[in-house]
Amino acid sequence: KQEVTQIPAALSVPEGENLVLNCSFTDSAIYNLQWFRQDPGKGLTSLLLIQSSQREQTSGRLNASLDKSSGRSTLYIAASQPGDSATYLCAVYSGAGSYQLTFGKGTKLSVIP
Amino acid sequence: EAQVTQNPRYLITVTGKKLTVTCSQNMNHEYMSWYRQDPGLGLRQIYYSMNVEVTDKGDVPEGYKVSRKEKRNFPLILESPSPNQTSLYFCASRTGAVGEQYFGPGTRLTVT
Image (cartoon, rainbow over all chains, first blue to last red; front, top):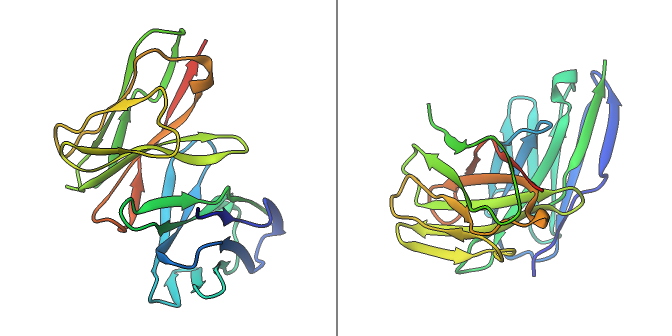
């Protein structure tokens, strides 16, 4: 069964710093990987979707990479801002038939002004 | 605006009183899902639907029912809610089996 792990569970950085969030998964037979942002008590907002054939995707200050063979993905945030404070979750599609999306438990990011 | 809507956003009810949480999407997506989110356990899938009249169980289906009579709607039914179903519930939809997933704003349910 697919398991997704995100380390660390929480991260605090000063404003302006570049940072990397990590995501690892146990079964490398994935279809794609999606990064989400969740603000407290709110729904999830899709940030980036990386197809299994891709190595990375970029959107503004965000860059996500995918290494299927090692079961890892990273989300790079450049020049962090207080508005980036949120919980970031990664999720992978795996399992032929059900195409179930398996989530990590997230990394809670705090950007200190 | 493309979106997934859920109603109600907040609900407090008592044990055993049947309730329905509605979910609707305006993106013509085939796939729809229900999740619950609990502290320390993360997001877990309850049920999903691949199209009209096609539904299947997720990881935690006990105590829940769903139906998909129209493509845009996917209601979640709790026939006899219990306190362990107190949680934050999310509906989501996507186009295709592994497409980008879009989430609703969530429904916070408290069962006393």
